[in-house]
Image (cartoon, rainbow, N blue to C red; front, side, top):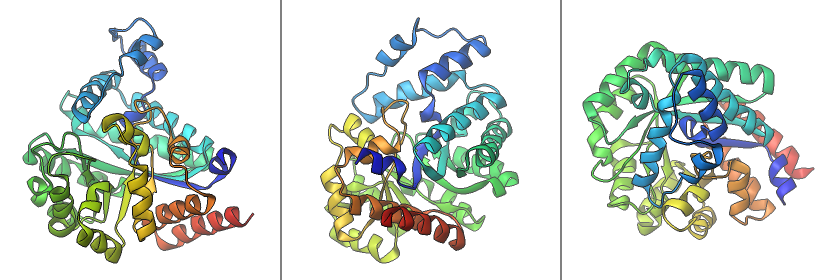
Length: 329
């Protein structure tokens, strides 16, 4: 089964590029930028990844970004992920990036996106993996800052396929960003939004995302099972859920595998992804292995993933044909 999973053509749709910063690269970038880390060894740094809920994870996550300072840093970060993903036969990835996590500490937006974009272009040429960028807003910052970031992104619209919403959900509902999302849709961006697992008011946040904001996808979102009417709505609209079992298991004590399988059985377009694999140990193949899927379920999950990508129809069909050929073989 592990060999089947490794060879399976995959799409990854829930991946935070800052969350792929492995300790080895963190030490390398710290040395390059003259930063002294408060850890003597890679092992000591890994041991510091001690978190058991979303806020404790985010604290370590944002602290780790301090080594990202220059365009080559962001290039190296993205290329390292794309190399790893290609080794697991990820054929296409839609990559979240958090510009506010960098602009808020003085790193220019232009520098961030140019490094990421250059890595994507080189990875397609050198590794044969395609990727696009999704710009996320940090929900624990002001909505006005999100709007300013949206406006700052407009000169780079051709490099950004959509927008998302992540970070600490408590007290930061989708409704807070309704105007930002309306403007993003007006500008031609596609829309997704984190509805994290087992958070305060999680089902109401899912309802706002689906009914009020009108998202094209939901990131995480397994609490939707609490409202069968919402389940029917996402099925009718073809809205996909980008689920991440290993990270679920660390921040909520449950991978939510049973819930994800139930949604799959009901016809929801669930997908499996790695979220922040440098912190939640496991890239997309390991997350798929965690689920205990049959081969038929594995293939269906990848059909879902390619169908809900933000690619033109002809590219979706090409990837789906590759998937069906692999399944038949």
